Image (cartoon, rainbow, N blue to C red):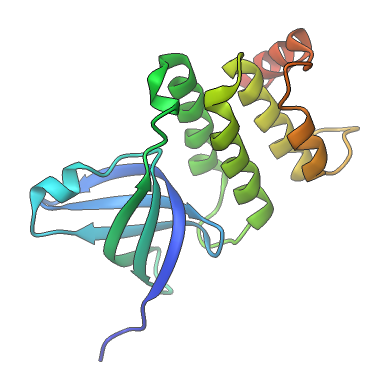
Length: 180
């Protein structure tokens, strides 16, 4: 008996090799939150092309287990503008690593997914990537109620603060205090 499959869209947070021709992918999707799945391929070249920070479309077999099976992975974008400058790539990797560590498995959090997708979209075009990363962290922590005295997350405010009018000093202090 074959299990039903489901098509999902997400962003790869981390990858690790599994056996000779497979990867374990940690993917953040809007529908299921953070999931881990194993993708086996008979062609080594297709497996080698998978890395973190990719927008992907996948066909998965949802399961009660921690590790799902992935039948097919198609890379939608590798965020080429993000990969042009090392500082932007570094900040994207730091935020991606944070998402991978903080979010529990199989918990759909569409507001965090939208926040993360907006961050990935705006980061390549933002003059100060450390400010963009701290804006993301501030909104992430505020949306989860983890910043005292901060109002709950409002998407409009998030979009507005990705402008060049942002107070650079305030956000640099914020990211420094969060990293401690």
